[in-house]
Amino acid sequence: MSDSNKTDSSPFSFKPYQEKEGEEYMNEAQLRHFESILRKWKANLMEEVDRTVHHMQDDAANFPDPNDRATQESEFSLELRTRDRERKLIRKIDQALKDIESGDYGYCESCGIEIGIRRLEARPTATMCIDCKTLDEIREKQMG
Image (cartoon, rainbow, N blue to C red; front, top):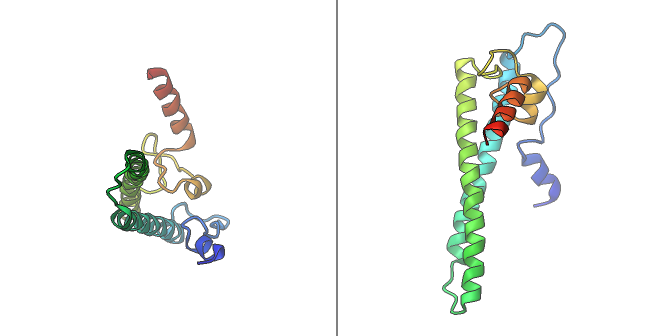
């Protein structure tokens, strides 16, 4: 597969949404735009999960040398941690898709204002506006 094909299948190789003058926030076209991004992203992550499972099955070997065994276990551990982060991300994507269905997508869960098209394109699973997220991170930093 060439690099250009990989880019085309990336969930973030979309054309940015062009807002029209006077357009209502989170209208049908915008919701379809974000649903498409989220579904591509989820499919991409699911492919990675499948690839990891096959890789681990195919490459699992019982090396007689303890150093080789340790290297393989370390590589598998790193892959599993990565997949765990991706599993959590898939849950966030699923929640964002539910929010699209319920009409809650694109609005801050803390204060209720619009999160914004560009912020959602940068982080489609965002649930807070930039101000609330900043305050949340400051509180988190202070609490430790």
